[in-house]
Image (tube, rainbow, N blue to C red; front, side):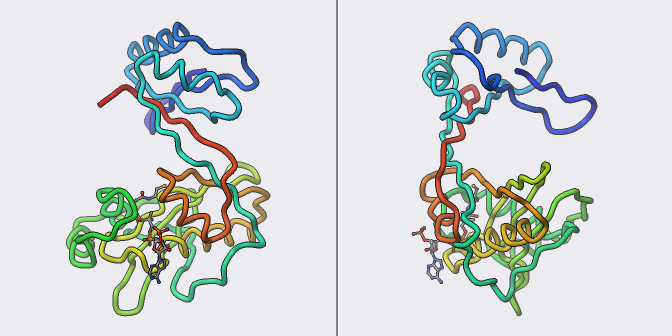
Length: 224
Ligand SMILES: CC(C)(COP(=O)(O)OP(=O)(O)OC[C@H]1O[C@@H](n2cnc3c(N)ncnc32)[C@H](O)[C@@H]1OP(=O)(O)O)[C@@H](O)C(=O)NCCC(=O)NCCS
C-alpha cells in the first residue's frame, strides 16, 4: 500500500497490507517505480512480526533496512515523576532546537554541543503550532536540556523525537522525558503507549523507565 499525501506535508512511506500475503521482489520494485513517478521517497515501513518475509525481499530489491526495536509501556513500571520535567500542549521553541542538536549527535554518548549552542540556535528560532504533547526537561540555571513528543491516534499514543543535548547526556533526562510523556498519555486516557528505538543501546534508555520490547519496526530506503 502506498499512501499519497494530498497537499503539503510529510510524504508517507509504503507498507504491506495487513493481513497480507507474501510480498515478492517484483512487488517492491513496482512500488519503487511508482514512488519515483510520484516524486516521493522510496521508503517502506512495516512490523517484522506481521510480515516476516518482507525483510529478505526488501534487501534483495536493493533497499537498506533499519531494524528498530518496538517497545510498549508497562504502566506499573513507570518511575517516580522527575521534578524538572513538564508536559505541555503547546510547543516551546526549545523543542525543535534541542531535538535538532540532539539528532545531529546520534547514539547515546555524551558530546560537545550544549547550552551555548542551544542558545545560539534559539536566537533565530520561531515557535510552531502543534497538535501533539511535548515534554521538556527544564533544569534550574540550565534551561531546557532534553525534549520529546507524543502523538495520539484514538487511544494509542506514540512517543517520538526524544533528544538530549549531547553535553547533558547520561543524567537520566532522556529517560525522564519519555516517562513523563507516557504518564501524561495514561492520564489522558491512552490504552497503549509505544515507541520505536533507533538501536538496541537507545532501547535500553526506554527499558529503564518501564517499556518492554515487543517487536521490530523495519524502516527501508535506498542506500544513501
Ligand atoms: C537517546 C538519548 C535521548 C538518551 O538521552 P539521555 O538523557 O542521555 O538518557 P539517560 O540519561 O536517561 O540514559 C542514558 C544512559 O545514561 C545512564 N544514566 C542515567 N542516569 C544517569 C546518572 N545519573 N548518572 C550516570 N549515568 C546515568 C543510563 O543508565 C543510560 O546508560 P546506558 O547507555 O548504559 O544504558 C540521547 O542519547 C540522544 O539524544 N541521542 C540522539 C538522538 C536519538 O537517537 N534519540 C532517540 C531516537 S529513538
